[in-house]
Image 1 (cartoon, rainbow, N blue to C red):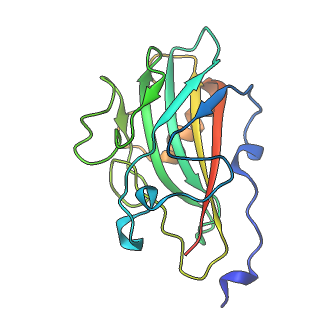
Image 2 (cartoon, rainbow, N blue to C red; image 1 turned 90 degrees about the vertical axis):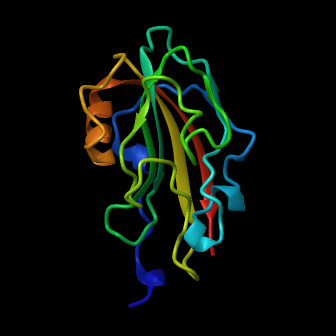
Image 3 (cartoon, one colour; image 1 turned 180 degrees about the horizontal axis):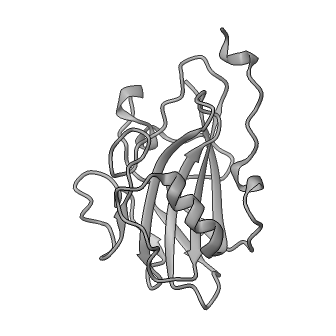
Amino acid sequence: MSLADRALAPDPLDLLPPAPAFALTSTDLTDGEPLSLAQVHGSAGGQDVSPQLSWSGFPAETASFVISCYDPDAPTGSGFWHWTLVDVPASVTELATGAASGDLSGLPAGAYHVACDWGTKNYGGAAPPAGDRPHRYVFVVHAVDVPKLEINDAVSPAVVGFNLAFHTLARGVLRATYQR
């Protein structure tokens, strides 16, 4: 079996209900460009450092945010969730570099992680199979219409995504790539 023989996965946002866009920027990521080693998983020679993110222009009725990073190109049939941070207060418009890494002391009060597909409750960096095509990493800040999703930290990122289908007001998106 060759990984090169598989079809390109669709952009995951194309499969969701449409939502207006707002600005998402980063000092650590450039839209359409490769991730730095800081945002790569330790097993692939990286540091697992969550990127700095800033957002603005979201709807006034935003009550909270959910932040996620997803790789649709992972050869799993279901992609790979690298990060899901839930219940970020609406007053927060930035996460510092490393806020979702290490001891997690940089997280806003009340926000929590659900386990990424690495099995950890933090940002888990990119680690596509060596020799595979470039993988896409879709970083999204979801503006949410409720202050807290009615879930807990034991659910999967898919359950968070299901809830977001009913509560997303708008999205800020950055797409990065990585290849080994």
